[in-house]
Every structure is written in structure tokens, then in C-alpha cells.
Amino acid sequence: MVGSPSKPRQAQNSIVASGLSEQDLAQLAVFGLQITSQTRGVIVPRVVRISVPQGMSIGEAQRTVRRINLKASADTDSYYYTDGEVPACSDPGCEASVIVGWTPPVVEACGEPPLIGLVDTGIDLDHEALKGQAIELVNVSKDTGSSSSLDHGTAIAALLVGRAGSMAPGLIPQARLIAVDAFSKGPGTADRADVVSLVSALEALADRGVKVVNLSLSGPPNEVLRIAVEAARRQGIVLIAAVGNNGAGAEPAYPAAYPGVIAVTAVDRQRNAYQRATRGPYVAFAAPGVEIRTAHPKGKSAAKSGTSYAVPFVSAAMAMLRATNPETDVEHLQKRLQENTQDLGAPGRDSTFGYGLVQMTNLCSAPGTGPIPVAGNTSLVAPQTPRH
Image (spheres, rainbow, N blue to C red):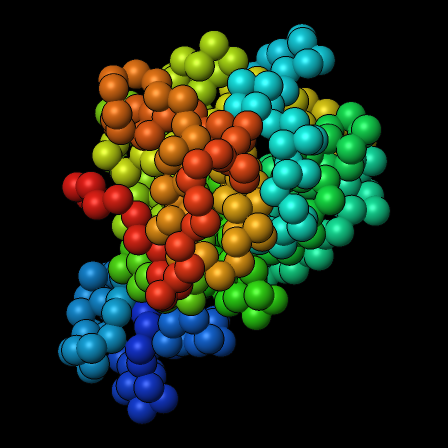
């Protein structure tokens, strides 16, 4: 998927860096390396996009940054894509909430509706499933290309907070959603986000007090993004991301494969693995993600498949737990989620299904578990598994 002509892996004439001073930037300008955009620096030291002059390679530009400041981080200007496709489906009841035990009484047992963050494309706020819902839409993408399409963001938003009784009811219709459009569409390309827009999105969500963020997107590893993810985790922000749709033998997808990010794969209604899902030791949980009927722009609905559509199930579950236990150590919240899974595939955690299929039935009222320990710190500590 990533790396095809329509989905390039990275920009060809820019890099990103973090930790540079004004004096450093002035020195870079002497070499023709100019800032074109930047973040505010509230999660991680300011991330800047730097244009690379003609005749200088991307690698040479990164080396120049490191020569000027050995402590700075520099990497390619990587692109990240949504993980969805639209297959045919004639069944109007394609929703798969039943296999994870997601029912209104179960959700009500979790107490107060949560605040959820979403980093995605634009959203059709006039769709009947989303109109009137508690959604704030923020746009951080400043790409010179056209604005993002509404398909993917509308579908994910509806899965999370679609109005009850609509053609696309969501998992937690009463929840508040802060949705950040971090994507843009260049000429002849798919919707894509870059490192600067993703970090800016995390900053916008942190500003609004969001502690659970849905990332139905994936791309290559990037050192600057990794540092931002680590910084967000240290602030107690839980990041839930798609494992990617590049197939069983593909390289790990990011940010899902970063330590501490909760990586979600997709299964169908028979609990079989989604055939295009990327696999690996970083996979944490499985959730429905095949032929999921959800909202489509202009008042329509469609059945969609991809690891993107599995992420909202885990994001919603973690958000409910977080709302019920706002001061709880995230490590213990994830453990509660692990204890409420249906093991699939090989016994125990595996590279296809992770800990298994998330189950909601006893998530907020599991008997005999006692109180969840209160946090001593707010960083997410995921089970340690090999990362490649």
C-alpha cells in the first residue's frame, strides 16, 4: 500500500526535525534549508518541516541538521494513510457489535460518557448520523494540496459517536468527540498526513484534555514521530492505532508498532483474521473490522473493511474505562482490557490476534476484580514484546 505511485512513502523535497534552536535554523538557512511549517512545541520540542534545495539529497539534508546540532532529531518527511477499503456487502446488518458484547446496558454500566480524540480526515457533520452530536472538528493540515476527503473520517466518527436510532449508530452515541483533520490530498494521491500534521493534531487534542486518541492510520517508522508519541504517552494520553492493511508478511506499521501504543487488528463476524491485516508481535487486540456498516458522506451508509474500522471498538472500550477510572494507571486499564478478551488463534498472545477479541460484557463491572489501582504515574506501559 504505502510506497505505491498514488501513496508515496515520504516527501521528496523536505525533511522534519525537532530540537533545533533559532540559531540552528539560521545556520541551516545558509545551506538553503528553509522552514516551511512547524508545530507549537507543546508536546515535544518544536517539530519543523524543512525544504531541501535542489541538488541536495534527503540524506545529506538530515546529516547537515545533525552536524549543526547533534542532539536534534531529524528524519524523512514521512506520510501516513488511513487503513480502510470498501468491499461489497448486501447485508444491512453488517455491524458486528454483537460478537464483542457491545450493548447499551453494558455501556451504561461504565458510567459517565467519555471524551474521545480522533485524528483522521474531514467529517461530514451534516450526515444524519452525526448531525447534532457532540463533535468538535479541528483542522491542522496546511498542505498546499486540496483538502481531505470526508469518507474515512465520517465512517470512523460514526462508529464512535453516531446518533442512536440513525442509519449508522455509534458505539458511544453520548460521548464527546474532538476530531482533528490532519489529512490533505495532493494531486493524484490518496488522503495522507505527515509528521508535522500528526504532531500538531496530538497537540490540539492535548490542549483540550483528551486522554484517549483513535488513530485509524499507519505509515513508516519516523524518529521525530516516535519522540512525539513518547511525549504524548508521558502526558497520560492513550494512543490506539491500526496495525495496517499490508498483509501478513509486511513490515510493522507505525505508530501502532511503537512501544506503548495499543495496536488493533481486524476480524470478521466468524472471528477470522482480516486477510489483509499486518501481523507481528506488536498486535495487542482484535476487534470487528470486516464488512462494518457505517456512515458514508452525503447521507449514505456503506459496509467497509480494514483495520481502521476495528480501532474504534478498542478506543471506545478504553475511553469508557478511562471515564470510569480517570485517575487510574493506564497499565491497569489495559490489563483490564486484556482480561476481557476472547482468546483467538494460538493460546495466549500471538502475532495475529494479540491478546484476542475485545469483550465489553463485564468490562466495567467484572466481579471479583476489586478496585483498579490508582496511578503512580500516567505513562502507558504496554507488555514488552520484540519490536522490529
